[in-house]
Image 1 (cartoon, rainbow, N blue to C red):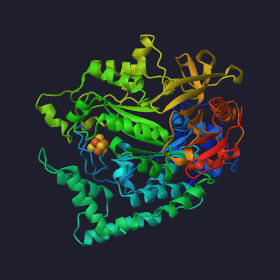
Image 2 (image 1 turned 90 degrees about the horizontal axis):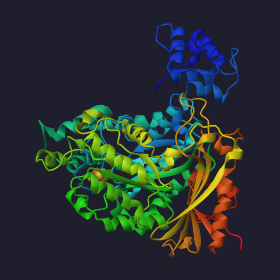
Image 3 (image 1 turned 90 degrees about the vertical axis):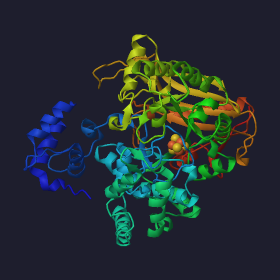
Image 4 (image 1 turned 120 degrees about the vertical axis):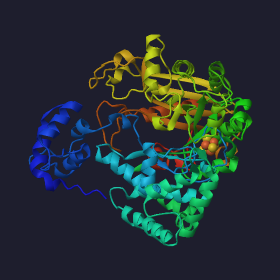
Length: 621
Ligand code: SF4
């Protein structure tokens, strides 16, 4: 583990920190020059991580001011990472067979299905043996080291089809994520876990089983098994079963990677009041894996949001791409997830085999015009041609080709144009390393290109992400309230927002002081008024708060602050407004799908704990 000790560099670090303290702001270039002036004795410069560690260690000594957050902001590497108000911690499950046969999906046997070994997040996971504790702890450490607050985190579990992993593995995986959050800052269990994996790998090596004790080499040898010259000789599922799952069994991984519901619940309980709380937990799965029982089970794990692969709303396209489920399955999944109060994060694909630019535009519109769908968030994945995917054969046969950049821009512009205010376009392009793409778009900044083109056409995107306040400064007297309503198959949805007109928001820390748009969003609440009874008995006769989000750079839990969005009591005001709407609709109680780490917040606002949800009595009219 990395052992940088600031006390070994006092002679260089103290003057560097004192100089940095004097300036109000510093550009990247200015910071680079400063660290060069105060280089280490061997000529190497301090990394930002080391500067932050040094400051944390030395603040209050050597004439350096006691710890102040504004100091950290000057050196924080990626300030936008936490501007949504919550620090995301993404973790990957281990490689495992997937029930899907989708022709566009990469078959990289070093990774869980659909991920590629040279994606940065995937590399992090691999270095950590795909272990949830190691991944979570190390991610928190990395965010903390570059100056971010991590007291409110959203844990995003990616990889393959979650619902297809054994239940015992799922419970263990989530329990270990919670354990890492609970340990962070008080106890470091990483060395013990690393040691366990290395010892097991050593054992397997002795028995002449594939694995070495280096995750990198293990992964490399797995990849070599699959490719013979240019030809892919074995399917992903077969390699994973033979070379990963079977050796893991021999090594005792499956008896290590197991936990009971009681063990999970104990870690969840601790997290309710921990210093690092899980305010949201996300898993990704397929529509045909969603059933009433699955929804309840996922909720019991502590999930608040589900990423779900929609990909297309045309059965013919789903069939051609061997998705293995139809649109009816997607309709049913949306219905069950919404009835259980989940936030629905849909994955939709452009440029699939069997589709076209015009067909894509119509398909995307249907996501919002058809009340069976109406997702809350979206990741748009234009289909990329990856060497290991079955789509290569279709491409070689001349039956499919990737869109040109102009065609892709046309579809994505349309996506921005028709996405309503209540939905968030989290991503419009997948950041696939260009060396993995055989042909097609390799620009990962395509979002900016499309946004610029929309600006030139004077089209203002309305989706949530385009309107987020980010680091904007505003006067609280300019805040406006807006409520909009839309229908889904099982509910009337209310989308409540606090906004500030765009012309009233300033961005003093940016080169461009104004950001285009008509309004900036400070916070919102999603309220569902059901049209029929939910299959979850405790939700009967109740409305449902599916999400509350207040923007602003992350602030410490429980601290009073300045004019940033999180300090204005907007969350509380949104709850009051939701209660009034529930009351007007004739309901006597309101539920919330709370994250484990937000339970205390809701208790303080009059909610009491149910079995899977929290409830607030709605006063009679
Ligand atoms: S279900 Fe998802 S992970 Fe599985 S093959 Fe299809 S796209 Fe890939």
